[in-house]
Image (cartoon, rainbow, N blue to C red; front, side):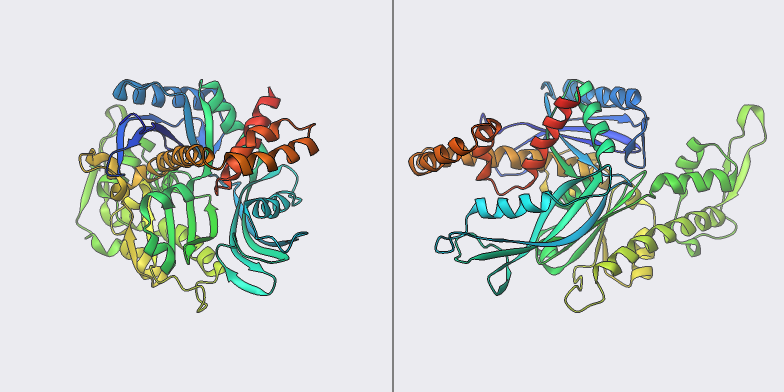
Length: 449
């Protein structure tokens, strides 16, 4: 079991911060060694608004995970979301000088690098550049162009953009908590890894991750990410509405939502009443479950309509963009009673709740298979996958030392002024485009000091 590297996923959410330590067992399933959870006090709608409180919450979650697992945490894979995230589509191309040679990973990285130079709005930075279909010369709809001949390489890209300050704040919190950032990824992509099957991604599916502060959307079709969006509403807005509508405190509103809440008002009779204890000797309040579900229904309907508008914008109603696998709901907010039925009613699509238990080892704690932990499980999977890719690269390097080395020297001589290139070389073989952003982001944080 020595080669089974341990990885840590850190989900910095609006309601809770989760640190999950795990590794893969001999069957390739996820074995969670420890989990730590802390109330998230310094995050609002996915954005850090109090650095000190966020650092304390991260440390609390990490300490708990360390004591449960008996392992020391140094590197973490962090997820980012928040209302500042937006996505756009972009097409770009490169003309290859040596069209008589086959297309290789360097050509694709040159094309991706070109997209990274796109001019964004002030204060924004590109987080992910996700290639979709390629076009080689006049041949369209190519999924994997490596190994093909061609002079012009073109591609459609899904570009995810976020605010530099918000990303920097998350990095600063992680660093100040005594941790090192090994990777950073978009939370809806992590949740998708945890709860979606490859068949669903091929057929076309919309993943809706309902968190405390935001609702994240990721749409897949033909196995490729097609659209992402972050809607700045989540479970906390429903709690706030209950608090205001029933004139009770937040803690009671949250309990009411979890225990008696329903997204479908028709389910409750007028005679069903719940009594809430009054504050400091005051009379208890009586609330009908019918009224409670009406409040919840109104807000949930608004959230789902926002999401459905994004699904329509992607082009779900066209023949080419049809999502055959429908919708998968996950996140803590997806546990609301009758939510699945309401989403089916509003969208007219097939809906299921996504549990991350498919990737977990058989003896895992039942708590971990809750949709609330989908993002943390996904981040842990991303970290383990990164370890695997690095291991594979090291194995590949031994037999292929000579031809790679000759090409390396030429490049290094040309770019003597940039010694950083030497460290990046092994990673070029990796097909993950997230590595480049992580490296640039780490440099960015180090320079900020």
